[in-house]
Length: 181
Image (tube, rainbow, N blue to C red; front, side):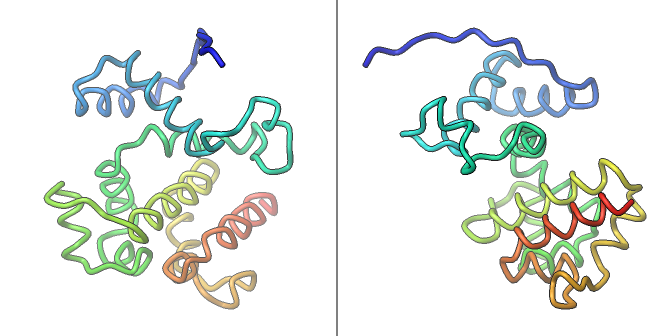
């Protein structure tokens, strides 16, 4: 099998550009090179190395409508994810959400250490849910939603449910919340 080139034009929202530029700068890359790198990484993570373009139409992969958080998750460096969630939730609520100590959260935000394993996954999942809800609701409403018990989560808050590795259920409850208006 021989490799084929594919030329893409990618459009980002104006609000996304500073995040992308900052990430590129941190890695010492041009914005164009970083965008190519991030898209390639996203594709291999989401589709797997053996996936084919035809597989995109299957039930296994998310719809185009749901790819915005996936794209942003792939582009956002982990220290920035930590900083955004820490600013939004505060260190103690973020600590509860990812089941980590407040000192670990501070260390990740300062880039002294990097979250690993379950912590990294929970941070990404929390960020994806947060991006979805805050894209429709105010920060204040989103934070209140984050802390309150939900029937669809067996009376856990989204923060507690993510800490218990129930992010898919949290995402479902978030979508229901947003659809209900």
